[in-house]
Image (tube, rainbow, N blue to C red; front, side, top):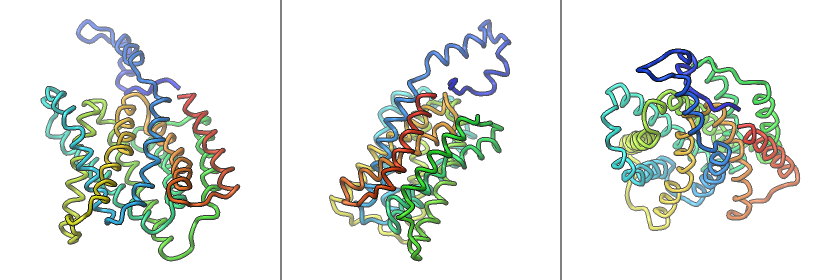
Length: 314
């Protein structure tokens, strides 16, 4: 797959700007593109731990989400200081966009963490895997981005595998149904977050984008906790260890996503996330003692195969 580039680069490919051939800028940008496949593979491993860490926590979903975002922003603070010269490029409009993106990210974490409190890892991540299809639809509606038949067929194969994984796990109790609904709503929120990022991260450093979005998400969740009367103190050392782990490992995936949005589309990033249910299910067996049926193993192989093929094309 050709590294994704902003439309303005292709639209003005034959023009000159300040004596510099824009076509050369496009080539230079492609030459500097990071190894997307490798980075997406790393992100799959990192984000697969998120469901496990949430299961380890007894704190309310909005609390674990809030501290995850605050700590992630804190970890990025030294890099923001290093990139402080780039802050001058930010305009008032950019801060509004960053705040909106942060609110959608906050909604995603709060809704998804809440779903994991009510349903199993497999059920929640199966529904979360609907993200590529919704992202493809959203990318077409917002950016008029068209996906080729190979990407669509790969996503369909992977989604078939995801469905097999969760076939015997999807619950019919009231709590499970609520958890499934929360997981679906979290998908809508994360796609909105990525679509906003696709247009914004090309104008500012992905480090600054990640920092301000994480901070905005933390503030949004903080406001919610205050209004809802959710206790924000009194959590033991074990809970803080989980908050730290959530901020460190799974958040690496989001920083990678923000970086790669400079080069590939939202749909491509979303496709890689299909590997999360498989990774999370394997980790749930090892760390939580959950069982896996032969049917789920078959589905996992389908997902891994399709994601591997997609990442090689990327």
